[in-house]
Length: 135
Image 1 (cartoon, one colour):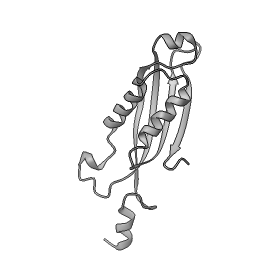
Image 2 (cartoon, rainbow, N blue to C red):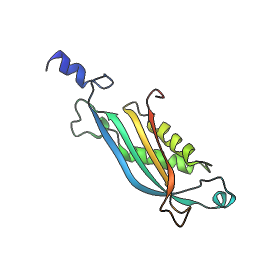
Image 3 (cartoon, rainbow, N blue to C red):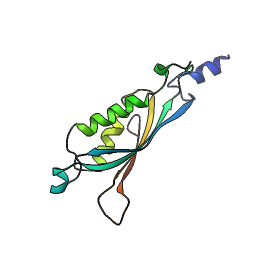
Image 4 (spheres, rainbow, N blue to C red):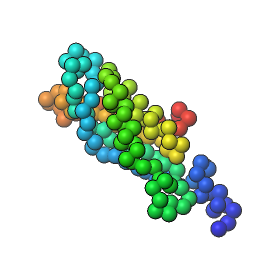
């Protein structure tokens, strides 16, 4: 392997390879909303998450060398379980910040939909993107 190839394979370098880790159509119950009836009962939300991660140069079929989506799920459940949140924007931002705590995650896209707000609409919600370093 040439010196250029070695540098390109190192995590955190500008030319490092990336992979996308995702969670799709996760439906959970959350305390979310600004209205009184939303403060009194949980409501269903659907969450979609896409993470751009620096790829380890040698995965070697080892779970420690990849971003573990089970750990991401645990983080999501922790944020949702921490108590009532007024806005889906706030929830999305907290989930994004939790994901970015893993140094291998370079960016995150979080989409949150409230499923039972309007009978005429399948869902309402927000999608945000956050990058390491606040960009």
